[in-house]
Image (cartoon, rainbow, N blue to C red; front, side):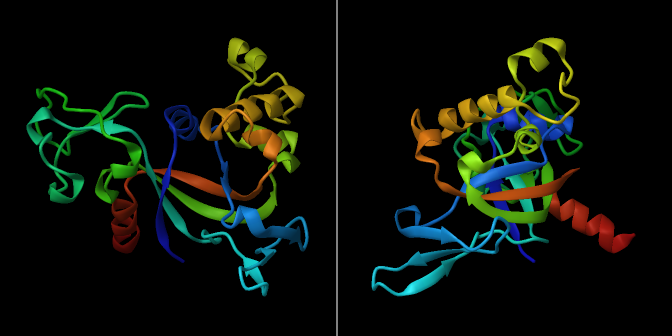
Length: 219
Protein backbone atom coordinates (compact mmCIF):
# COMPACT_ATOMS: atom_id res chain seq x y z
CA UNK A 1 0.00 0.00 0.00
CA UNK A 2 1.19 3.49 -0.83
CA UNK A 3 0.16 7.11 -0.31
CA UNK A 4 -0.10 9.12 -3.52
CA UNK A 5 -1.47 12.53 -4.61
CA UNK A 6 -4.41 12.88 -6.99
CA UNK A 7 -5.76 16.07 -8.58
CA UNK A 8 -9.46 16.92 -8.86
CA UNK A 9 -11.25 19.88 -10.43
CA UNK A 10 -13.44 22.12 -8.28
CA UNK A 11 -16.78 20.48 -9.32
CA UNK A 12 -15.38 17.04 -8.52
CA UNK A 13 -14.03 18.22 -5.15
CA UNK A 14 -17.54 19.40 -4.31
CA UNK A 15 -18.92 16.02 -5.44
CA UNK A 16 -16.45 14.26 -3.12
CA UNK A 17 -17.49 16.46 -0.21
CA UNK A 18 -21.19 15.90 -0.97
CA UNK A 19 -20.71 12.13 -1.06
CA UNK A 20 -21.70 11.87 -4.73
CA UNK A 21 -18.33 10.80 -6.10
CA UNK A 22 -16.87 7.36 -5.34
CA UNK A 23 -15.12 6.64 -8.65
CA UNK A 24 -12.62 8.32 -10.94
CA UNK A 25 -11.17 7.33 -14.32
CA UNK A 26 -7.61 8.14 -15.27
CA UNK A 27 -5.75 7.57 -18.52
CA UNK A 28 -3.58 4.49 -18.65
CA UNK A 29 0.06 5.07 -19.63
CA UNK A 30 1.38 4.00 -23.04
CA UNK A 31 -1.85 4.78 -24.90
CA UNK A 32 -0.11 4.53 -28.27
CA UNK A 33 0.88 0.88 -27.71
CA UNK A 34 -2.04 -0.51 -25.70
CA UNK A 35 -3.52 -3.57 -27.39
CA UNK A 36 -5.87 -6.10 -25.81
CA UNK A 37 -7.49 -6.30 -22.39
CA UNK A 38 -7.36 -9.74 -20.78
CA UNK A 39 -10.79 -9.41 -19.16
CA UNK A 40 -13.27 -6.70 -18.09
CA UNK A 41 -11.72 -6.70 -14.59
CA UNK A 42 -7.93 -6.94 -14.86
CA UNK A 43 -4.80 -5.79 -13.12
CA UNK A 44 -3.29 -4.67 -16.39
CA UNK A 45 -3.47 -4.78 -20.16
CA UNK A 46 -1.16 -6.14 -22.81
CA UNK A 47 1.16 -3.77 -24.62
CA UNK A 48 4.15 -4.12 -26.88
CA UNK A 49 7.17 -2.03 -25.95
CA UNK A 50 9.42 -0.25 -28.39
CA UNK A 51 11.56 -3.36 -28.74
CA UNK A 52 8.52 -5.33 -29.87
CA UNK A 53 8.42 -7.35 -26.64
CA UNK A 54 5.12 -8.04 -24.88
CA UNK A 55 4.62 -6.39 -21.48
CA UNK A 56 1.81 -5.76 -19.04
CA UNK A 57 0.81 -2.15 -18.46
CA UNK A 58 -0.64 -1.78 -14.97
CA UNK A 59 -2.39 1.17 -13.34
CA UNK A 60 -0.12 3.18 -11.03
CA UNK A 61 -2.69 2.92 -8.22
CA UNK A 62 -3.58 -0.35 -6.45
CA UNK A 63 -6.32 -1.53 -4.11
CA UNK A 64 -5.47 -0.37 -0.59
CA UNK A 65 -3.54 2.72 -1.71
CA UNK A 66 -4.49 6.03 -0.11
CA UNK A 67 -4.82 9.14 -2.24
CA UNK A 68 -4.62 12.65 -0.83
CA UNK A 69 -6.61 15.11 -2.91
CA UNK A 70 -4.93 18.11 -4.46
CA UNK A 71 -7.16 21.03 -5.43
CA UNK A 72 -6.92 24.73 -6.29
CA UNK A 73 -6.01 26.79 -3.23
CA UNK A 74 -4.51 29.97 -1.86
CA UNK A 75 -3.02 31.14 1.41
CA UNK A 76 -2.42 34.54 3.00
CA UNK A 77 -0.76 37.20 0.87
CA UNK A 78 2.09 37.35 3.38
CA UNK A 79 3.24 34.00 1.99
CA UNK A 80 2.92 34.81 -1.70
CA UNK A 81 6.69 34.86 -2.11
CA UNK A 82 7.05 31.36 -0.64
CA UNK A 83 6.85 28.17 -2.65
CA UNK A 84 4.90 25.29 -1.05
CA UNK A 85 8.18 23.55 -0.21
CA UNK A 86 9.26 26.63 1.77
CA UNK A 87 6.10 26.70 3.89
CA UNK A 88 6.08 25.24 7.36
CA UNK A 89 2.64 23.62 7.28
CA UNK A 90 0.83 26.09 9.50
CA UNK A 91 -0.07 28.65 6.83
CA UNK A 92 -3.82 29.30 6.45
CA UNK A 93 -5.42 27.62 3.43
CA UNK A 94 -8.46 28.67 1.41
CA UNK A 95 -9.90 25.81 -0.66
CA UNK A 96 -11.28 27.45 -3.78
CA UNK A 97 -13.80 24.70 -4.63
CA UNK A 98 -16.10 25.91 -1.85
CA UNK A 99 -14.16 28.78 -0.22
CA UNK A 100 -13.62 26.76 2.95
CA UNK A 101 -10.97 28.22 5.23
CA UNK A 102 -8.51 26.24 7.36
CA UNK A 103 -6.45 28.33 9.81
CA UNK A 104 -5.10 25.51 12.01
CA UNK A 105 -6.40 27.47 15.01
CA UNK A 106 -4.71 30.76 14.13
CA UNK A 107 -6.43 34.10 13.47
CA UNK A 108 -8.36 34.36 10.21
CA UNK A 109 -8.22 38.12 9.67
CA UNK A 110 -5.75 37.95 6.80
CA UNK A 111 -5.73 39.07 3.19
CA UNK A 112 -6.02 36.13 0.77
CA UNK A 113 -2.99 35.63 -1.42
CA UNK A 114 -2.53 34.57 -5.02
CA UNK A 115 -4.21 31.65 -6.74
CA UNK A 116 -2.23 28.40 -6.62
CA UNK A 117 -2.65 25.41 -8.91
CA UNK A 118 -3.80 22.07 -7.52
CA UNK A 119 -0.58 20.40 -8.62
CA UNK A 120 1.30 22.62 -6.16
CA UNK A 121 -0.79 21.76 -3.09
CA UNK A 122 1.47 20.19 -0.46
CA UNK A 123 0.47 17.03 1.34
CA UNK A 124 -0.09 18.82 4.65
CA UNK A 125 -2.71 21.12 3.09
CA UNK A 126 -4.90 18.34 1.67
CA UNK A 127 -8.29 17.95 3.39
CA UNK A 128 -9.69 14.83 1.64
CA UNK A 129 -8.30 11.29 1.75
CA UNK A 130 -9.44 8.48 -0.56
CA UNK A 131 -8.85 4.77 0.08
CA UNK A 132 -8.92 2.68 -3.11
CA UNK A 133 -11.27 -0.33 -2.92
CA UNK A 134 -11.31 -1.50 -6.55
CA UNK A 135 -9.26 -1.04 -9.73
CA UNK A 136 -10.49 -1.94 -13.23
CA UNK A 137 -8.94 -1.40 -16.63
CA UNK A 138 -11.39 -0.73 -19.45
CA UNK A 139 -12.17 1.39 -22.45
CA UNK A 140 -13.55 4.80 -21.53
CA UNK A 141 -16.85 4.24 -23.35
CA UNK A 142 -17.45 1.00 -21.42
CA UNK A 143 -18.58 3.07 -18.43
CA UNK A 144 -21.98 1.92 -17.19
CA UNK A 145 -24.87 4.20 -16.32
CA UNK A 146 -24.43 3.42 -12.61
CA UNK A 147 -20.71 4.14 -12.81
CA UNK A 148 -21.38 7.51 -14.45
CA UNK A 149 -23.38 8.44 -11.34
CA UNK A 150 -20.52 7.17 -9.14
CA UNK A 151 -18.25 9.58 -11.05
CA UNK A 152 -20.18 12.40 -9.38
CA UNK A 153 -21.86 13.91 -12.44
CA UNK A 154 -25.47 15.07 -12.64
CA UNK A 155 -27.58 15.47 -15.74
CA UNK A 156 -29.51 18.69 -16.25
CA UNK A 157 -32.76 17.19 -14.96
CA UNK A 158 -31.23 15.88 -11.73
CA UNK A 159 -29.36 19.12 -11.15
CA UNK A 160 -32.58 21.11 -11.59
CA UNK A 161 -34.51 18.76 -9.26
CA UNK A 162 -31.60 18.64 -6.79
CA UNK A 163 -32.16 14.89 -6.54
CA UNK A 164 -31.58 11.78 -8.62
CA UNK A 165 -34.49 11.17 -11.00
CA UNK A 166 -33.18 7.64 -11.63
CA UNK A 167 -32.67 6.78 -7.94
CA UNK A 168 -28.91 6.56 -8.46
CA UNK A 169 -29.08 3.97 -11.24
CA UNK A 170 -27.88 6.33 -13.97
CA UNK A 171 -29.15 6.68 -17.52
CA UNK A 172 -28.13 7.90 -20.97
CA UNK A 173 -28.22 11.47 -19.66
CA UNK A 174 -25.74 10.77 -16.86
CA UNK A 175 -23.39 9.08 -19.33
CA UNK A 176 -23.71 12.15 -21.57
CA UNK A 177 -22.90 14.36 -18.58
CA UNK A 178 -19.78 12.30 -17.88
CA UNK A 179 -18.82 12.54 -21.56
CA UNK A 180 -19.07 16.32 -21.35
CA UNK A 181 -16.96 16.33 -18.18
CA UNK A 182 -14.29 14.15 -19.78
CA UNK A 183 -14.11 16.37 -22.87
CA UNK A 184 -13.86 19.49 -20.71
CA UNK A 185 -10.82 18.01 -18.97
CA UNK A 186 -9.08 16.28 -21.88
CA UNK A 187 -10.19 18.05 -25.06
CA UNK A 188 -13.24 18.15 -27.37
CA UNK A 189 -12.51 14.81 -29.07
CA UNK A 190 -11.26 12.94 -26.00
CA UNK A 191 -14.40 10.84 -25.53
CA UNK A 192 -14.47 9.78 -29.19
CA UNK A 193 -10.87 8.55 -28.91
CA UNK A 194 -12.16 5.93 -26.42
CA UNK A 195 -8.81 5.48 -24.62
CA UNK A 196 -7.89 2.81 -22.12
CA UNK A 197 -8.50 4.04 -18.57
CA UNK A 198 -8.05 2.82 -15.03
CA UNK A 199 -11.34 3.04 -13.11
CA UNK A 200 -10.71 3.53 -9.41
CA UNK A 201 -13.41 3.05 -6.76
CA UNK A 202 -12.76 4.49 -3.32
CA UNK A 203 -14.10 5.57 0.02
CA UNK A 204 -13.82 9.22 1.04
CA UNK A 205 -12.69 10.56 4.40
CA UNK A 206 -12.63 14.22 5.33
CA UNK A 207 -9.30 15.03 6.89
CA UNK A 208 -5.64 15.24 6.11
CA UNK A 209 -4.04 11.90 5.33
CA UNK A 210 -1.43 12.27 8.07
CA UNK A 211 -3.97 13.40 10.67
CA UNK A 212 -6.09 10.34 9.90
CA UNK A 213 -3.06 8.12 10.34
CA UNK A 214 -2.26 9.72 13.69
CA UNK A 215 -5.81 9.31 14.94
CA UNK A 216 -5.86 5.65 13.91
CA UNK A 217 -2.54 4.92 15.60
CA UNK A 218 -3.67 6.66 18.79
CA UNK A 219 -7.09 5.00 18.90
